[in-house]
Image 1 (cartoon, helix red, strand yellow):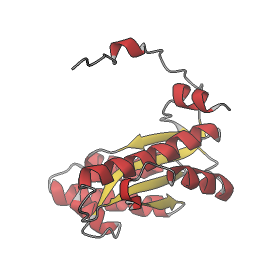
Image 2: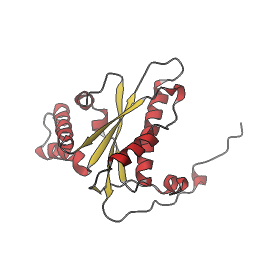
Image 3: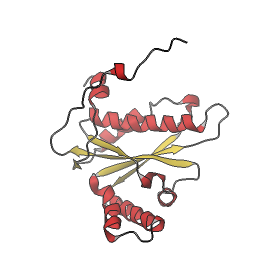
Image 4: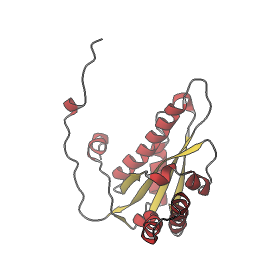
Length: 186
């Protein structure tokens, strides 16, 4: 696959089934992530893989976080939270590791970690896998961060759902760059 094809035609897949990425595919996805732009070579990212029964434990963590935030959460809302990680056979939690640095502000580190996560999503497309990058309330919940064992300086960039695309693959709608680009003439 040509690189420009991947960059111009990748789309998210909400419906993902087995199989999950193989160990060899995961290695290639992570190698792509590690090539993200990185001012200062801080490598301000790390990744957690969640698969098998760990997805159910992550769902339980989500339900407990929801219950802590909303003590009156309905059983349906709690069940929905528990089911979230079961939408794909594997999840990768992309984590920004924010460091004090005199030349690299935290926002650059966040962006670098986001680029690393994007590298995983792009590489998944090249590998013929489906991927969906999700955030939502759980990505910003301190209870979830604690339950995942994140340090005080770490933040969740997103949950990347991975698997085999189910159903018809959609093509992205063409966009005209002219609608997003203008020249600045000083």
